[in-house]
Length: 455
Image (tube, rainbow, N blue to C red; front, top):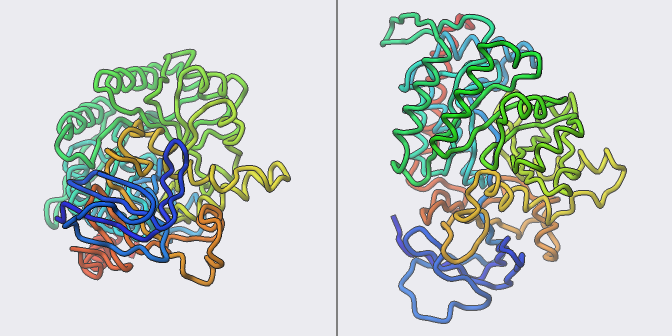
């Protein structure tokens, strides 16, 4: 791994407190962190490896605050969302082994690298509410593959939603055994994973997930016990508590029943919120992951601009990678603008600079990592993108912020750097065989389809 890099001659979009844009600037990286940044030429002698960023924007890596592990290998299954939920649940419970989760993780990381997402927060499972936390093997396989790929990740693990029995298959070569899954066992495994990954890799964090329960469900003793235990585990460990699917009063109900939220709560979707929901977000410091391309944003609206006016941290998530969306955060920036501009009938809603904030520094804040990533500043980790702006759809060369938020896409990313390690240069993965990643994922997909009786 190169310990020193000097990125020169680019338009440096810092996303720092002053939102500086340095034309023809430089970024010096040493030992994985930003050692110097400025306009013009670097003023000292340096033996660092040089990267010429002429014609490019140099910017912080993109941060996706809500996605799912597993979904890369369920894309295109089912003709509509309910079909997809059924098929995916069948595959996750009946047809996966650690190799499935490792192959899917490598594929997911490759897509993120190629579209400039240097950090993502993923639920381990989801969609049809199948969390593979009955044992640590699947999550360990996923995390090992992510570590090898070099991206930064927050993996949320936890229990299934109660209400019906879950029986999973555990494979050993060609045979399998069946195991009944209980929430208590899942939370034991989740707690073990959280503890085991503290300090193991500075790019990877394991946190807790919790199903979203509405007011009626919270009267059920099992649901209440799961929620209370997960809350306590997250607070004792000092890690995030991630939830997927708040809507219609659920935030206020969980606050009233459990005092569930604090500044380490990350709540995805948050559609059709009540005034009481919004008041809880403002009071507790809980953060929001807004997913404009998700199906929940079709069923209801996240009041992202209004929440930001209230002082709530709102970040962007892709809800990727299935059934019908990708990890491309540029696409989500554009979609977020159109989504809210159409609602208000006002094109000035969510201007380009605010969209880039949601995808960088506000994403870091949502993950409680704003002191480490999300902007290009001395001392922060060197998660950096070089975006090729010398392209017809990104021309003429004015206002780089507008061009990025309105016109760019993931395929415009030329170079991706995480923690000072170059993961992609010139659109080619560095140190990874992309064809081998694709072949491995295809083998895992075909075996899972066979095991699930879908071929």
